[in-house]
Length: 269
Image 1 (spheres, rainbow, N blue to C red):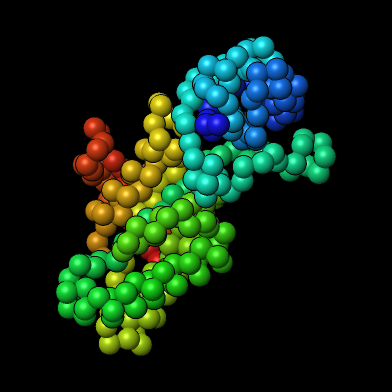
Image 2 (cartoon, rainbow, N blue to C red):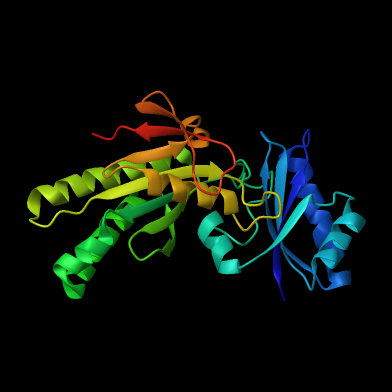
């Protein structure tokens, strides 16, 4: 059956309230042949997200309506493996009161890396040597993801898209990646230069794809970055503590965005 991810606006409710609503969904779901797999809740923004296996959206929302009356504002169909890559889990969190800890808010930071002039590199080096250079890129990026708690979402051919639960960890990883390439280039006759872009956002927004706008902005920031630089959005910059050095680059017009985007460069040396 299809898998859906929905979004609720639930300002004023607590984690315990959301856990109880989820419990009520589980009580009713069997009557409709629906499975509520898990949920996320951001008490700061007052948003909740439910992952549901159902024959159709209407049936899934019928369970919500009967269980507690909280109907989702937006619902999108998703791929389960993509949800796991972006959000890190597709099963229930630890219940409130049984182990403590805050519920995951589902806010994620998305990172794109891109090898600068990869097409020219392939023409210059040939396919076999160019593949070796891409593998070197992949190894350095994946090492940083492992060290900083990032998850690889997909390989783009000349870069990697990754997701992080935390903006600070994502920017730390980006800085580690640039430092790794700097060290690599000191020891290698053939240089590898990368650009990196990051944005943060929610998984469902205005009937878009999973993290659709966030993925698009992170990709556009990466594409607009100069070689050896890290560009982040206002959403990411606002989540960073004072230990990070940022340069305000002002607003940029990016393809696919109707309004100029506030852009910041992260110092990494």
